[in-house]
Structure formats: C-alpha cells, structure tokens
Length: 208
Image (cartoon, rainbow, N blue to C red; front, side):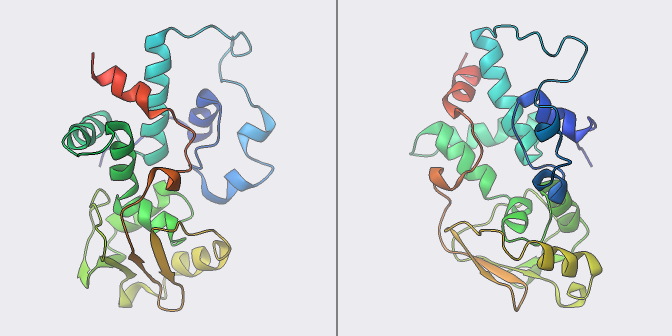
C-alpha cells in the first residue's frame, strides 16, 4: 500500500500549518507547530520568497498531505473535477472530502486520517451494509457508513469514540454515536473543508 514515508510533524512544519496527521497529539502542547512553527532544516529560519510555481506546488503538496493522497491518484481526482459542472478547484476538494477514510475521520471513528485509512483497509467498516476495505471509496448522498458488527468491541474504536466525542461533525454528515454509524446527507460544500488552501493555484499548476 502506498503511503507517506516522511515524518508527519515535519510535513506540517514544512507547510506552516497543522494538517492533523497525528490525531490527539495535534491538539496538545506536543504539537510541533505549537513548539517550532518554522520549516525543518538547517536554514529553516531564512524565509526565501517563493516563485509562482513554488506557491502553486506548495498548495498542491499541502492538500495531498492533508488527505494522504499520492500524485497519481491526486491527478486522477483533478481530472474527475474538470468533468464536473462546478468550479474545478472546489470540485476537487469535494471529491477528496468524499473519500471513505476522510468520512470515517470526520465521524470521529478515527483519531486521524492516516489511522482512519488503516482502519478502513483492515475491514472495520461497511457502506450500505456491505464491507468496504478501500480507503479511496467515494461516498454519495444517502450512503450509510457503519462500524461492522463484529468490530464494535475493538479497543481502538471504543477509544476513538470516547476521545472524539466532542469533535464537530460537518453539516453534510449525520452521526449516530449509539450505533457507531453515520449517514451522508448531501455532498460536501467548499465551506465544509477546513483546510486553509487556495485551490485555484492547484488548478493553475495542472493547467500549464
């Protein structure tokens, strides 16, 4: 399975903002952004002015890291977005938000997107009553996501439910904590995306 190899806190420091890649640690005083809010490396404190290409690339890399998507798949999502009727950059973010691993994280059943991706890959969830172990599965309005019956007693699920009980669930999702399930009410909107990104730079980068 393809995955990021770099140390996750370094990714956040490089991007200059929290990408919430390490779950509870990101909300604590141990977060690297809180302690060392500058890029890693020997010359990190020397801020070089980015070129137009550098700015575009930075926005793309930030978005890829946030959702845990590799280049080939990210380009595939971009091509999907260009075929939609809306604004390409916004459609791209809506597609990324619709990934099953992101939905599991948003519902609070995963402490981070990387962990949620692992839980999905290990077959802990079902969609509309069918086991789905593909993290990139794209949910649709009306879909029901649920922890599989024989996995409800898993320690990691119980811990996440308790720890993330206060996490806000976006308006496009509906959570049923009692039954460890959730439902997709509608497609995510641009305002539902909490990543600070200027997606038009990504469109400009791929349009060259």
